[in-house]
Image (cartoon, rainbow, N blue to C red; front, side, top):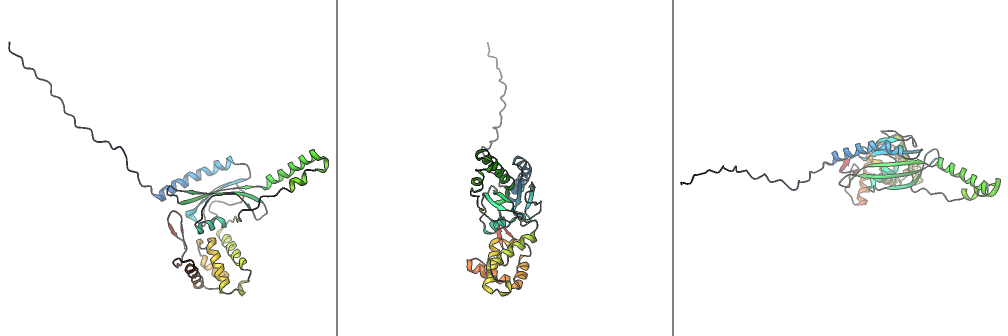
Length: 277
């Protein structure tokens, strides 16, 4: 009996699967785009954060890339500022010095005498560069009034109508101010304050100032961040009764003394070098 030939079905040969990468190279994050996304995120958080805080508190978000008109979101009305208003002198000075850091629970005071408890938090991108500042200001005057009333009530209860505990309550040491800060509504007001303070430090009328006095004024204004404001040179020249050329010479002289390259403009690092006219 002859063997009957059988044919096996042909096996389909499958191509080996394409190699699946086990790791995907990290995509470089574009810093400006990242900061824009982060800014939008924090803008949306300002209102709910403000609602979560006690009454008489204010939350303010500053875009450090938009100085001096840096306020981009506000919730609350402690200082009366609005979107588009400028940074405080304290924040401007921090930016100018490059010493941007958190300041927690420092004491400030409004022009009307109300005491505030303020906090400034510096927000940074993934590269560690500062791009925004989130500030909280709480009006202490209401709480201090309640504290006095409570002290009087407790004193009256313990010591009779004379309120034996009142004096002890009033005599408690008050928290001293850790930093002076001026809350302004427009850039001209901010500039006027900075110039006034720098001139006041010299204790010499402008018309009696010598070169060293005026040079000291310009140095102080540079440290305070005045040159981050538009038309700063013109405003300072007018206040010191000199020419714009003289102010530029002072700036170059200050740069020489500091060992830096003389420049007609002030630069500040906010994620990248930024030149402000």
